View (cartoon, rainbow, N blue to C red):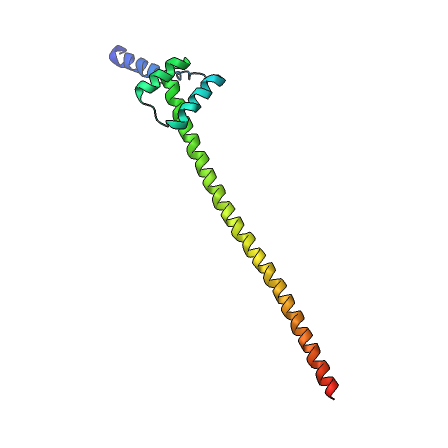
Length: 134
């Protein structure tokens, strides 16, 4: 009875166990010199050819994968920074428009006060003339 069915059940039990997860490589702590050189290269070259990547990796004592990952992460950071800068510029435009609007409203308020005081002065002068003629 235990023939093949017993073996297959046993194998199924073994296969149903969760497989141990692969250990991730710990985070690479780049030296200041490595970061400086990578940033310097990134200023004028956002994407590297395989030959450039090999050259940078060997000169800085890094693996190709580390250089690839660093450049991918740096491009993503640049994209985030550019989007944030764009939002800041748009916000500044809106604030500037609001400020300009408020200044215009204030200016209109001053003009209205002046117009009212001029109107009141003219009315007082008219009253004086009318009263004087009576």
